Length: 499
Ligand code: NAD
Image 1 (cartoon, rainbow, N blue to C red):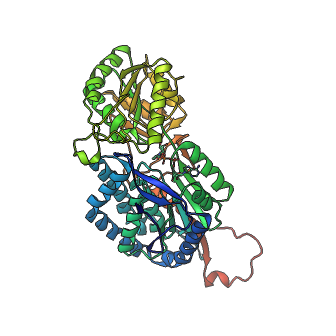
Image 2 (spheres, rainbow, N blue to C red):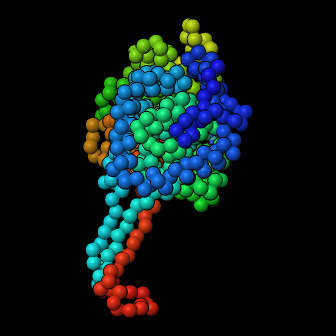
Image 3 (cartoon, rainbow, N blue to C red):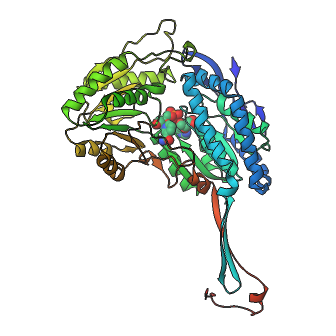
């Protein structure tokens, strides 16, 4: 059995706590490796080493830091197939989807090459007689990221690339379900020229996370995962005086207006609802057609598309639509929720229960499900299922459909499908959700914009990647300077007026 490691000061280091987590191959159900779970002492040691390395890195000019990331881009492209294979093997997603996971992280690394520009400060010449004023963005010191299982390449890169570009040292605590790709990325950063200690990967569970939250050296914490843990991490980090941004769960609604192109809407729903087995925080899990006729037409278009979906292991070729879910526990939870849907009176139009894949009976595969006539009091509507389950909620009017999305506790992503610009514009303007698609089902912003949900999908006041990341990972210092002509005036005992 392969024993995974931590990555400390540029080298793989075995865990010493004696505690491990099983890492499964979700397609076969086999345990393929075990990941060490760091103790508080191991985490504190990694943080202390990062703190020792960080000042020299912060003093390295931003162009040189950018060049490390430039080389990282080359190395990731060189190793794309290897990274994608390792990712699929532990996560279960298809190879093309795994490459997308790497690619969306890579794009943030590319953006961060622009650190010299993004870190430029402000300058006021002549703020007063002989007085100049300037602001600079400085690194925070040692910062940390705690990341989820569902994007084991993309989200770690969203966190560490900007943090490191800003001159911080970074402690990455990846998901214990699929830690291999984060470890590979850390190796590549060393190969790209990053000094030892600036990117430490420490595997672990709650003990390692709490060690981060309680360590005084850690200046900022970025988290992505489920909402209860996001809330917990946000409160504990901020109570300890740290800067913190936490992104949580989702229940993304897609509104389908009667004038929408129904084939386009159905294709979009199938991809966004079932891609990656629904294990995406931007997956569409609720379809809200406006009008009975639209709803009936949509069901008619969806059913054959869903029934045709090819579910299988990533090794079965690139025409597989989605793979297994991540663990047996995730599978059991999805099946439990599907049962509540049936018990609470939703109409199960496509029944993926008892899905069986020959040769992979022990894998964590879940068949696709489509529910119609779902109502807002049902568990399948209120809860994030994080599986291949699409629910249709029927609305009579646009206002009613808008209200469903607005009233849900989550506010990560949403979409509207329509040909009417006025409706689309009204929707984008009024909706209380962070990321909005107009005829785009998964509106994940590109690297140079920012990513973040509202309501219970996001805690903290800045988004991930784009310019916000450079604000989150730096603090501003403002200098007021007066040179000899001013000093000749002698002592000043009152606040100087800038006149
Ligand atoms: P999770 O909350 O179980 O785990 C996320 C991280 O928190 C992991 O590193 C895990 O080790 C750690 N953790 C788990 N339990 C903890 C505890 N009790 N105390 C301290 N740390 C703990 O989430 P997951 O299952 O890995 O990921 C799926 C969730 O992430 C979904 O809810 C999904 O919507 C969400 N997600 C959100 C976004 C976003 O940007 N909003 C993006 C991706 C995933």
